[in-house]
Image (tube, rainbow, N blue to C red; front, side, top):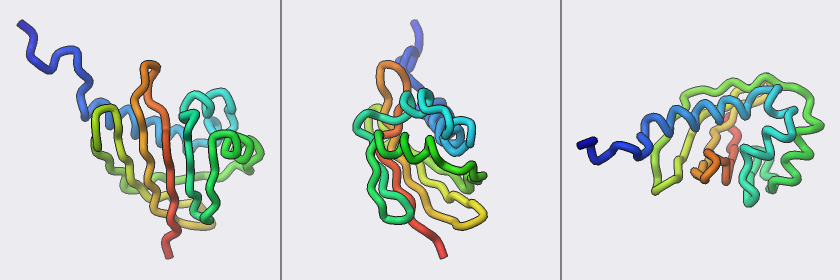
Length: 124
């Protein structure tokens, strides 16, 4: 008889997958690929940017589509399960211009993981 956990997602595997997706979202290739972004962002996606601006899925797709490529380094990523099918990631972004503490909420769907909410808070 298989163990009780057989067939159920493993939290460590989920965390690894979502960390990979978060890193992918920070690449210029992904940020320029509107179709890929549309699949990764939930329809009810919201973001509170490091500037304090609030974005929804449509506005962030437009913004990233016209963004000048910037290298974003992901520093000290950590994550944890916060409920069935939900993961919370925390990390620091570093670009030439700024550093910010980032928090992302990911939700599992029938088709994979999607980003539901993201927030950036500038660091001194």
